[in-house]
Image (cartoon, rainbow, N blue to C red):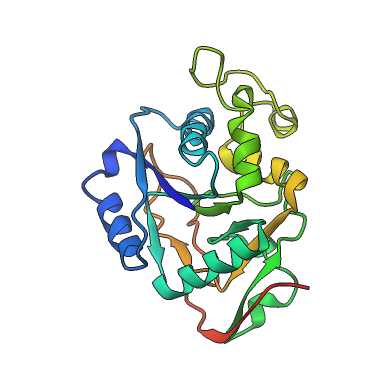
Length: 228
């Protein structure tokens, strides 16, 4: 498994350092892909995600963003479960609809992976703060650069996959993930989340509402299992 972090240059001395320290406690030392984008752009994230896929070609990919908090031992447990399952796994899920019914009432929460309900819907899964991609999905993405970049390597400007056409714009890497994961066993969420979004707002300005995990602080009930 190849860990890769997409990071903005503006976070080089701040959030990125803190996130890397959190990951190092789990023994994870990601390669860095640095973006210098001057404005918010889902197309730029998608373009740079292709760089991450290329670096992980032939292996699984742990895709990370640069403003995260980590529960180290739990993260390693989740990654072992994800590798065993071979299914795309969100380690940080920020919306209640990313969880099966009843899960958010558990306290403590049994350590496991569960399917994300309606993950591929337009208002299904979103957020690529920390996602495990199995080798088959990595290989598919790496083999389809046209879904990420134009022929000259620059960011897409026109829709190319169904979520793009549905939204009328080039969507982010998370939309590519949830659309393409349908070919490779769907998407699961790691419970309780072992990664949180240390949300300090966008590097390109403020946005409405915090994007935080509702399960990151929930204590573990130790019994790591895969879903039936």
